[in-house]
Image (cartoon, rainbow, N blue to C red; front, side, top):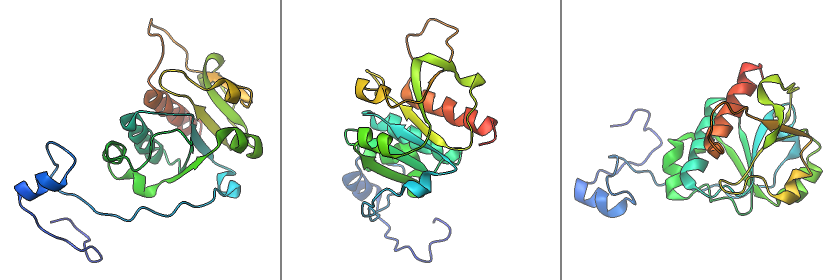
Length: 193
């Protein structure tokens, strides 16, 4: 039985019932039915004096869930997504977050308009840019990460104020977007942001 269940309605089910109501082939032994919060208008003031992740058409729910979980680990509270980014409440995304989704502010917006209006430094993850380990981050900004197969879309590249690259030492063609997000979050944390 979970701890701190005073305000939670609990229903015990057997394994056969759990398998019927779960979307997983091998359920983890517990499910939660939660209310999805109503969409709220993005408050630009909540982005000041902090760093936020911005996702351009991230498609894989596992990648998105890992990004949410990583941002939560490093204390980043806001993730702004393009309208074509995978849904945060996709079952695979929710599972990948391991509970972190409940602590994050996630907004879906038209990124081109948002980046124009944000009035914050925009650090873009590109293959050619300033070395991430030599970057002067300041105390606020947006970390723009691109689609798994195509990177950041051409119309958004012009919005980037500071292109950033994670230096390559081996032969791999690119990094997974969730891995890139983790490196950015770690570097921001290391630099005291």
